[in-house]
Image (cartoon, rainbow, N blue to C red):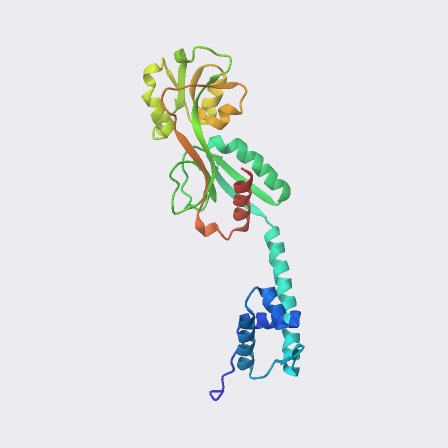
Length: 283
């Protein structure tokens, strides 16, 4: 090397040589790395060219290591031990999940979310959750909200989205009340008129004698359970509540999806990614 520069071995070549040292053979290294035998030979030859010495000799019984090869083998074995230590350290860091997550949750998802937070906290006791239950969509670009659970059919494409559940709305009434057609209607306040359920209900107002308005579906559910009126609720609430029954409708009811959403810049937050995975597989 006439220019006086020293060539540095490529790390991937050292990893392949490490596999050769561990397996004590080229074919063994090929199997352990799941790469071709010719690739192993080529990369070892490139490493020999880089360091400028012969590292292995081929014999009828396999390979032997030269003195330089034995020395380099000792070094890469130490490197291998360090890599194992690093992997163990990374694994422990990944397992050591702690911190606080701020969650904006539509009210209909709050009961299920609360249960799953309890299960997650049991295995990760150093975690805290700050929950805001609201049917309004919070801007996740703001730093004070980490993730959101929303009922929507058009999630923001700029966000990471995990679909948790699909559901329809059902017209519901207290189970022991009759004459649903004569009951007063219960719905959300005017600020939610853009929602599919409220648009559908608006088309049926000719059948209403009066309308009670609330600021969340959970409030609507409590009013319906009291026997005062009828209204739209998510199917999973009606079907799992012995106090409620569904009323058949002549026109199709809206269907929604429940989404878990967060900003892609948080993909490296171990607490958020662990909790998002927990919701994805247990919801």
